[in-house]
Image 1 (cartoon, one colour):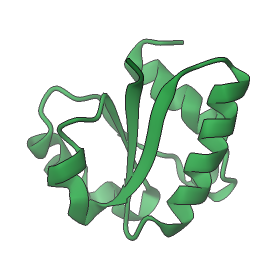
Image 2 (cartoon, one colour; image 1 turned 45 degrees about the vertical axis):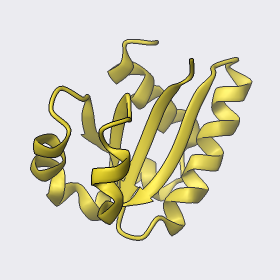
Image 3 (tube, one colour; image 1 turned 180 degrees about the vertical axis):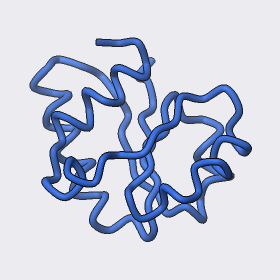
Image 4 (tube, one colour; image 1 turned 180 degrees about the horizontal axis):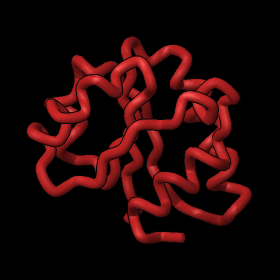
Length: 102
């Protein structure tokens, strides 16, 4: 079953572009992941079923809230430069490292 990489951001718009680039990078690497982006308001619905959670730079302030809502899940924020460049390959590598799936 595909592991779920879940990204949370303010509204989900720009992050959906990053998700598409991550999907392309995963396909090129022959990896099977379920990658999706949601607004932080959907944390309670999508956080608990994620295998790894990445936070967009605009919501990294909420990391402790996300950790409290999703105990035991690997959670980190996406570095601003990586996010700004829409670096799908780099962001995927970050998620894979957290999953221990390098």
